[in-house]
Image (spheres, rainbow, N blue to C red):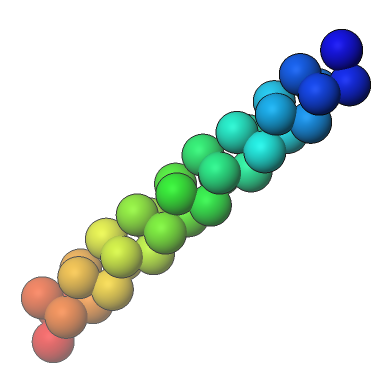
Length: 35
């Protein structure tokens, strides 16, 4: 059960990191377009 809990946390962190990376990339692209 502990292994499943750890895997769930890793997946959540992975999705969060991916979301932040994509969002940051989108913002960077938007700033470049504005300039």
